[in-house]
Length: 353
Ligand code: ADP
Ligand code: MG
Image (cartoon, rainbow, N blue to C red; front, side, top):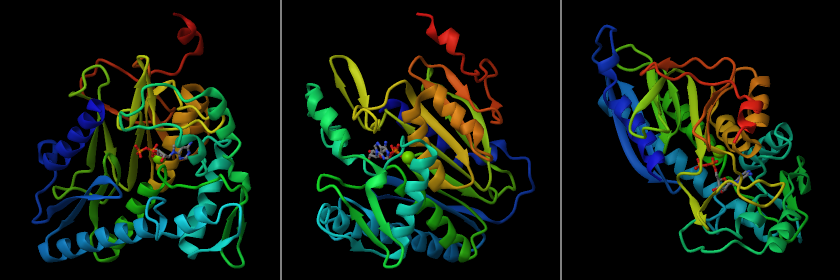
């Protein structure tokens, strides 16, 4: 919880105090901002403009877009099309809006890319875990093992002719917790940009996309929290046309017998994934970054780093559960305290007790 808060704090600090780092010529444009709860998350929308009225209108349009997407895709809202698909599991296909259909197609692509580490049909295992503090003992291992049988993106049957989706297994459910915020951030950015906002930020609790530059002409800067000294930034990322998305175990987790279990499920085992505290993905697309952050978290430091290093234009920064910092080959960070540098993950060194 704390670490998530500190990352958020740092991100906000930067957006407000960008001038501290600025050397560019001042302009009359200002960063207008709105913070509100959407998709169960604290969203922050920033529009840079000389025209306050336009900025306010664009931010409101961005908010409406996020609400529209939530109503369409949320597995928690009974009236959503996702809920209709889930209710019809095992009985019949459901025709949905092309927008939702395409999101499912793209989700399955990410599943294939990540060998199933990212899988929107994770729910059968997820429901055995409660991340609200009410859980005190582990679920029975046989139930966890049985739940895995109801996970499998290969059994989401799609028909492109009528945009229908059919979950073959009656116990199967889909959910967009690991990709929906990224999709919504992309779309809110698109809506605001179309209205003439040439620079801004959409930030969903640390999952963010930036475009253009700050009012002073400088790039956006995003701070990465130091895992050892939680309230300190240890490095900066320069961001423009960039999504920066973090997955981790600090927001939703449960502690059982002193061990921490986070809300990201390894679809291969049904247990919460372990090995990493957080993964930050940096790439131009917030939806892809969101899905890859979750997948990389499941894959762990070795396999995850290998995957990200294969993907052009995608970088990552991971913090392992031993507080090591691991970066992808082409990640460019600006070191603030200059006392640490990201490590290349070393299997042998990590084998030592
Ligand atoms: P956050 O929502 O904190 O940014 P993520 O993007 O990693 O974190 O999403 C985690 C959420 O995704 C979980 O709460 C759950 O709804 C869903 N989820 C859990 N495990 C998986 C998985 N292996 N693949 C896809 N979605 C998952
Ligand atoms: Mg995600």
